[in-house]
Every structure is written in C-alpha cells, then in structure tokens.
Length: 225
Image 1 (tube, rainbow, N blue to C red):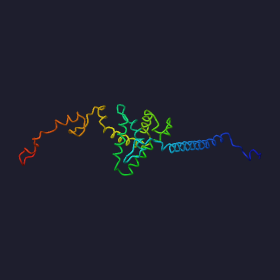
Image 2 (cartoon, rainbow, N blue to C red):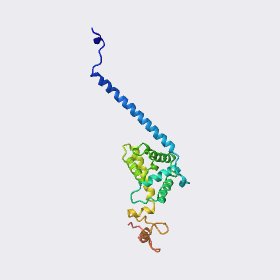
Image 3 (cartoon, rainbow, N blue to C red):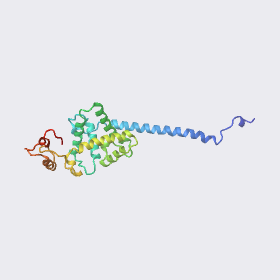
Image 4 (tube, rainbow, N blue to C red):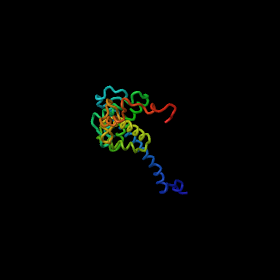
C-alpha cells in the first residue's frame, strides 16, 4: 500500500466544512470583544461625566436629587408638544411639581424613578449617532431619542417612557400657561381660588342666592323625589 493511501489528505470538499465551523466562532468572538469594548467605553465615559452637572438651580428639593432634576428638565423641554411653553420657568415648575408628587412615596418608587432618569440620560452614549448624554444633545435630538424609547422592542423601555411622559404631562398641564393652546379655560373655580377669570365667570351662575333653599327642604315629608 502506498504512503499516500496510508495517510490520506483531506479532500477539497472537507476543507470548507472545517472553515465553516470555525468562521462563526471567530465572528462571535470578534463581536463579543467589540461589544465589550463599546460597553466599557460607554460605562467609562458615563462615570467620568456623571458629576458634571449644574445643579445650583435646584436647591431645596424634597425627593429628587439635583442631578436628577437637571436630567428631568432636559426631558421636559424635549417631550412637551410643539405648541407648549418651554420657558425656563415652565420647565422648572414641572421639575418642582414632579418633586412634590414624588415626596412621600415609597423610597423604592423614588429610587426607581431616579434609575429611569439615569438610564434615559446615559443610554444615548450607546445610541447611534449620539455619543453624548441626553443633557448635552439639542432639543430636536433629544426628542428623536425619546421617540426611540417609545417604540423600543424592550417592553421595560416603553413602560419607563410612558411613566415618565405621564408625570411630565401631569406637571405641565397643571400650569395656567398650558390651558390656552388646547382651548381649555381651566377648572370651574370660586372667586379667590386663583383660577382664570373665564373659569370664575362660569362658576358665578352656578351659585345660589343667599336666601335659596335646597329642593328637598320644600318637599312634603314622606314623599320621595
């Protein structure tokens, strides 16, 4: 028997199979390394920049941390509808209104709200084409980024954004400035309550005269309406 017969060389058909088995492994390793490097970079940049916030305007908060308040203000500016008032006073009102809402809630709920804000803030670092945190983006880029959360395949991201949006809108639409753009004159309020004049004018016709008596007082006893 010839030496070639005793030591047969791999056929041409066998070689691609071996390569095919090795290539996915190599690609997976390269992908894992790239993801690991990217995650490390994102985490490092996030930690490095984590404390670089101007928190001076938010002294005296009850539930929110000053850092979370700065993030929330950036979210408010990008999340409000086009016709909304985005002035600094309105944005800060929304932050303080949210702080009042959170005050007194269970500590775990307040902690989860902080984690949500930090996730929204720093997840931009891994979101193409944004390599800056949310508070460093333009209002338009922030709005586009938040819309991605609204349609994200991960349910917890969508739920988190819905919760954030509910709180922001609740805070904003409690301001008188938000009434006119949506054609709302405000709640019907008595004089001195602080409502808009239109609302007080709607309230006045509902007032009974000082000598009026309830209908049931004039009915004979024993009769039901």
